[in-house]
Image (cartoon, rainbow over the protein chains, first blue to last red):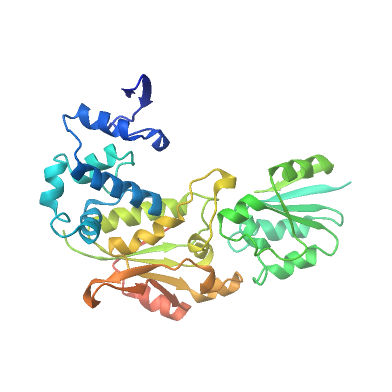
Length: 110
Length: 101
Length: 134
């Protein structure tokens, strides 16, 4: 699979995650979201940026449970819950948000 | 005739490093790479054997493997840290090479 | 799903073989299934959590920062063999500072590393239900 962004072809794995994490740009995030009929808002970006920082620090994509807890600590309890995260990422905050953020699929995510 | 002995197994897990030391001759060179670099750390229960070998052999360790394991700066005195180019030089400057896998 | 006491026994140095990384991945998966997970670092396994790892020179991913995320996964007990450290010329100061936030104590940051001698390690192992060795 591949994604066409700005005239460049970005390789994706069979589940639509970036083959090379270093390829990621905000434009690619937008394109990945558009492909699934999602328009990225400031609320989405808050989570995507959080995920990228988490990956930078720990070198893993966090499991949903860990993400929910950590978002609650960072952005407040009204955002650190499944309902809020699923409202932004209906296919699952772990899988979908990590994909847009250019992270690998979370370990332990089936 | 000098031989370069390359060892890549931790001396705490396998006997390859011990065998290497037992079979190396005076004037030979010994190079630690991969998991064997833990043998270069001073103050371990294996350090004495490396120090004994240094009496008549030259001992080297691959710096990149030391750094990967967080052991940079812990190599004992007398062990020469080499990079990949140094690794190549060692193979070129010795008459033969033996790997202790 | 029932919760069991899982122990992962890590006995190999990182990078030279794939065991350390494989173990870490299974650890994270087990924790995602909310099992009660502990880790033991014995023999060359203690090298997995040394501080200052820099794997750029060998062209492999440095996965040591991931051990610092274990607290987020509620993995709070990392037993380190005191004999294994001493045999290798290492002390606890050569290890990363691994901590967790204690939810029962106002999220106070507490150390995850527990130095254990062979006797203490054996007693801890006897309390486990599932032991996986790497």
